[in-house]
Amino acid sequence: MGIQEPYPLDVEAVRADFPILERKVGGDVTVPGEGEGDTTPLVYLDNAATSHTPEQVVGAIADYYRSYNSNVHRGIHQLSQEASTAYEHAHDRVAEFVGAEGREEVVFTKNTTEAENLVAYAWGLNELGPEDNVVLTEMEHHASLVTWQQIGKKTGADVRFVRVDDDGRLDMDHARELVDDDTAMANVVHVSNTLGTVNPVAEFADLVHDHDGLIFVDGAQSVPHMPVDVQAIDADFFAFSGHKMCGPTGIGVLYGKQHLLEEMQPYLYGGEMIRKVTFEDSEWEDLPWKFEAGTPVIAQGIALHAAIDYLEDLGMENVHAHEQLLAEYAYDELTAYDDVDIYGPPGDDRAGLVAFNVDGVHAHDLSSILNDHGVAVRAGDHCTQPLHDKLGVPASARASFYIYNTREEIDELVEAVDDARQLFA
Ligand code: PLP
Image 1 (tube, helix red, strand yellow):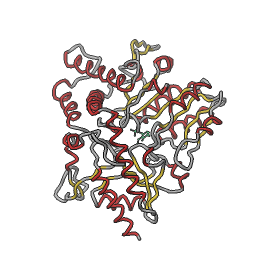
Image 2 (cartoon, rainbow, N blue to C red):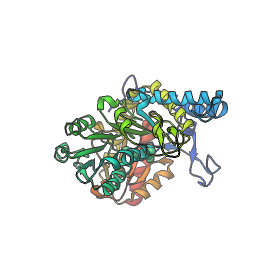
Image 3 (cartoon, protein in one colour):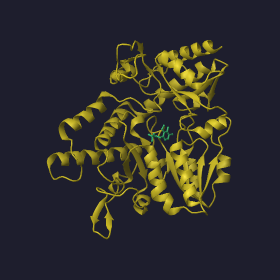
Image 4 (tube, rainbow, N blue to C red):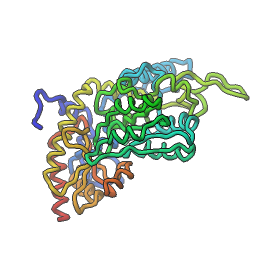
């Protein structure tokens, strides 16, 4: 695909917000931060694992700790009130960003994995039994796959998997066979972190709702990269992680329809989530605090607010368009080699990541050679081990793109891949 005019993002301006991108690498890894041996410019293509944090978000964290660090909801003093207000507004901002009704539907967690576990334990353990089934897909991340698999073992519910076809897409005919009146929950990944497939989650939600089941959509790889509206999808639950969208680690989001969250029992008990406690019993706080036991992720939540402001200033449509151009370019460049296998749909129909293998080169060796070129990719099964088993490979290398990546960086990637090919030829 040619360059679009006008180009969706001012990538040079974006890069200026991320000082880490000026880093050199290649030196002694026991010394964190740039050291003497670091001489190779960094090409960071591991964004599906964790994205970088712009100055604006680092500034929000620093500002919190420098000027109003305090525990929330527990103090009458001014700092506590300021922190509480900022923390609550962060929930409002997230609600607005993904189209939730309000803060009651937005629970802050540690990450997507914890959001999955929250629903699996608080809802699944109480609601599921041997007569029920839970429908997943073969491309689920371990965050949901392992969680529902284990809840299935505890409750006797049958856990079934919708097939992924040879093009890396969900076999929706198979989904229609698997989803039935005993389907209590489906868990579908919105964008596959291995295949780059964008799944028809709204269609899936309709299918599950027609059978009176619920659907949990894993949005860890969609929310950072494209406009998402949880109500348009009609997701009952939806989760994502701050560290993949310019925010810090330690913050994730569970969206849940209010009536479902109200019906659910808490997952963790303790302070902050209670309204009244006696020696005999306790009453729970209102949503979302009922699900945020103990001192919550205050700095991280406030920083997530800043990350959302940052992304929305760029425009999620622009973020998406930029990444699609990069993904298509990378796909085209890499498929030019007939000994490179790329998994998932074609370049013009995928999210901004490319998982691949080079014939005769283990993904770990490949990624190590890329690292010598300063190119950071992920090697392994990307927490989709059963999917890799199905693909017939133990591992793959994955390059994943974000707002600050450039075509020149993809050229570096391709050059490094070519080096690996020649080395192992
Ligand atoms: N789901 C998908 C699709 C992911 O890509 C990831 C992370 O890579 C997760 C869930 C888990 O996210 P976290 O590790 O932040 O809990």
